[in-house]
Length: 329
Length: 247
Image (tube, rainbow over all chains, first blue to last red; front, side, top):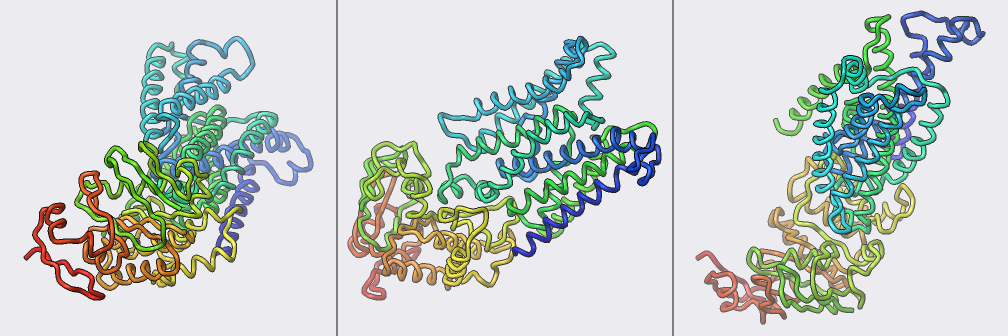
């Protein structure tokens, strides 16, 4: 078993490493490895300032979303749960849409949309938790109910604001809601990593607790776990990861659904191995998707949210079909 | 040592003590409050009134982890959303003893032992979701035993089991109780209770009807009154009653 764990972990790390090495050299303008490292223009600039930060952002975002996906699925014991299910993605989207509609971002170069998106996610988290806490206890069921409710309200408000928006704002809203990776400053990447890395590592270290919770609340409680506190911790961790990623990229669907699902069919449900592997595989998956998004109709770029859904949708249908074959037929 | 309980919402005025080791069967018709009683004793429901003490301390005042080292609980049935193997499910019973991310070799020995005595080693690496109802029940029991409890609470542990495994589970519980385990079993199988229990608690409509030895609680008149069913009592093994019904 231990061998299997290390093999799976090594495999997913190797996959990510290969992706990170190959993807920067694919793109609408071909660049040469030797010239990029020798510092020859424009290869160096394209490699160092256009492609590498973008690929790193997609890797961090993909890894974070996959880990948050595993976490939310364990919290509500549903393999189909996503950050949307629990309201965070739409709360974040509402924040961004408000910033666009009310013109907060126009006056300054400060990334107001990012801040508004993160603030939207935070407000949603507090609201969902306040709704979900019955007395001092919290259960997966109340969490799910309040998450789904807040999600609907946020989506309705987004539609309303979008309806009132002018043409330019409307364009910006759609661009944001589709989700996409852009080239960012290295300092922004560093900030994202500083937030995400501790949250992901801590989530992985509590793997055994997620195992128990994903079986059942009474099951975990009878084995010495403080369930309410664990659900709260998990929800905050998942929201922190999702909120920070979504602020920079917009809501990108399917990563948190496909990657955990595919890995579970190979590795089983043990979160101690599932979580770290999901991080590396999710990072590789989104980096590949974003590279496809850059080159498929180059020089025009496709939003990566479209690519993940177009690859993810059919893959998911196949997964459901093959599961049915083994379980029910 | 004592557990005392005075009335939950579905239970009223029930007062019981479980001082010594032994196998206690909790019987009664549907809706009698048997499962509620068990989950209160397991510390899983906190909406009860009155008191429920374990080792002289209120169950809700126990640290969960310390309580889990004393008491383990076997639920009525277990459905899993995710593909854990049987062995992983049993390993979860070691949680109150583990500190690191992974279990120690001692944990593995304990899991091996629990799976051997519940006859579950043959499918240890299989996906729990693909096991039959009876196999699942034995795996869950193995998990509860891997927890090395002093008190074991079981809710209908033999429902999905075939005849052989029903008897084997009760024999196993009886043997463990002779070695000092305190087991409380909620069951509908009144004959298994009669054949193996040291003590029978009968509940009906949330009230305590009878509490005592098998012979003193399982009488023809009481079963007729509580279950609304006419039965015949025969002499069984070890001069325990053998209840015949449905005639």
